[in-house]
Length: 314
Image (cartoon, rainbow, N blue to C red):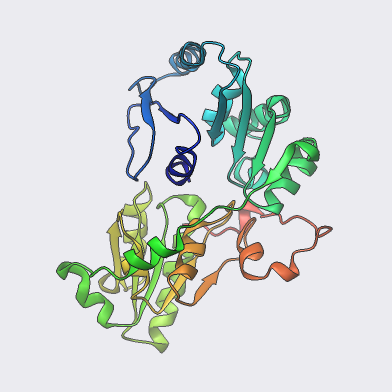
């Protein structure tokens, strides 16, 4: 979304993209200049606190009191830096997940919940990527609804169509000669891919030739691969890692599946629809219902809640 926004804004604004952290990098096309605050990877609590305030000071130096600037931040840590930086310009924070589901009132979750409650109201505008995210911010965090604007993610449909027509490399082409179920997303707890692998093991009983393709990287890769081995489907579950062009794989699949426990507005689901294949999704908070069954999403509908004990152990 930062990539697309930078390209759209560059014709009217002088765009700068600010990155920080030891692993910061850009893997998508963009417009504007890139500023690295640092390449640090804080190792302990005190170092993390000092690094936070160092980054706030660096942001203040970059802005230099320019009242014409607009600072838009994405995700919780950048939002925190944005809100703590003294400045005379406009501040916009973007909330891209269902916060009350993502963060429990334990450990660091308690810290992030407190920052949302205490600081987000200071922003000139809060952007929520779905109606349910907005509702969550109001009902669970007490933020003023008039400050929150719902903006769904945008998609370059023509570009997605063009990319979906590219050939799959020889190494993986043979997989798509079979009925393929595909999923795209980081291999982290939020995405719930263990549910998908277990469901796939049951699908194999009815569709013996079926294959499961998962695109993405993350810290659960080894555990997911082990689960596939335990269920006897490791030869039919293919982890293809991060792909700069996932659309050529999605377009050649029979069905796309989103197994997430929570979302904001799931890009992978919308992009699979843009590729023209059937989709199946968990009815998680939030996003999928607004995309797939918007007529069933009423303004007075009660928010979802997930019982962590029922989310399914990996």
